Length: 73
Image 1 (tube, rainbow, N blue to C red):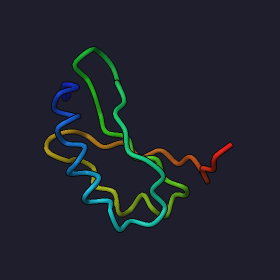
Image 2: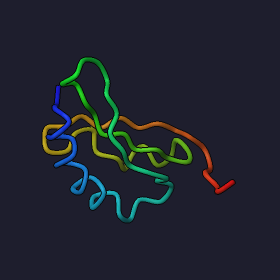
Image 3: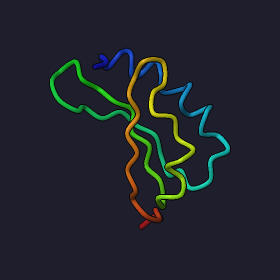
Image 4: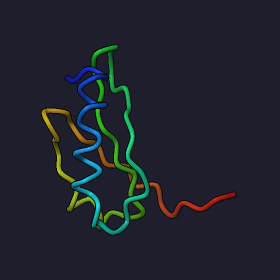
């Protein structure tokens, strides 16, 4: 489990690690369970990008979500 503060602190490190990963659409914070159970979420276009996403950053779990292509409305 990670607090929101820990997740916020880990987010820049995850963004830096994903800088060259093709297919990443976004990085955010998601509450998984209780008030002190936060994870980092990486949205990717397709399942191929999943392999390059670390499972944990600075002791904060990372969840990958395949969202498909993202475009402005």
